[in-house]
Length: 232
Ligand SMILES: Nc1ncnc2c1ncn2[C@@H]1O[C@H](COP(=O)(O)OP(=O)(O)O)[C@@H](O)[C@H]1O
Ligand SMILES: [Mg+2]
Image (cartoon, rainbow, N blue to C red; front, side, top):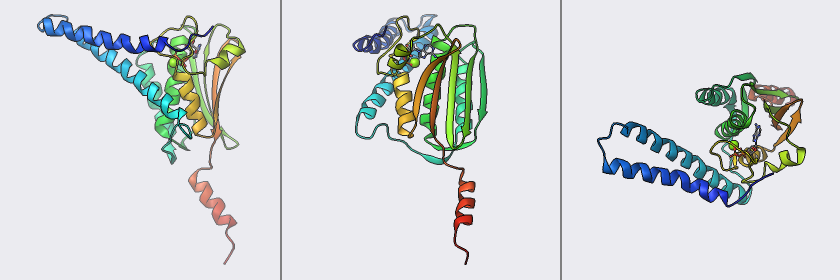
């Protein structure tokens, strides 16, 4: 079962109201001992709100002509980007994350690809079965870039899995503070790169796979161009 739509309005208001309540408290009693706790909560709420607003803007942009705009770098250091995203999520979860990155430089929008992994990985640690590891693998095979993020999960019927890519779709018992845009935006990032994002159940695991064409590394392209050039 999916819930969509208007819930997002509440989700947007909750953190704003928390900020306002915290600010009111500080205004009344600026010397309170727990001021530090309240200020931290204000910061957390503001960050959640920032993420929601960013996601809503991405939704709007993806609906405009041509999908999400990219800033491609033909030699983006995607390995470093992914390592950074994994470290950020490891810092906020006790879950084990097994990482195998057999990639280096890839023609892509580095920040957007980081956002894609971040969305998939935060879902895996939030929605996946607790106490079981999450796996992240990236490789290039036959000029196809492939990223998979998998975690153990209660069985999800195929029809429900495919529906999760719709904006504002969330599982019935969804945890976390997301508003159901993470998978939609991840699939739009894949689409903007000429690729796609899929989900399937594979022996008790939910597996998200992003694939896209991967250009040959620049040095290899130069070598191909040299060998193809007519001899003088
Ligand atoms: N790795 C996962 N394991 C199990 N369920 C998932 C996973 N990723 C996503 N889901 C389900 O898909 C829904 C949509 O995910 P998403 O678009 O990221 O929205 P959100 O995380 O904000 O709920 C989640 O609410 C959850 O029910
Ligand atoms: Mg999410």
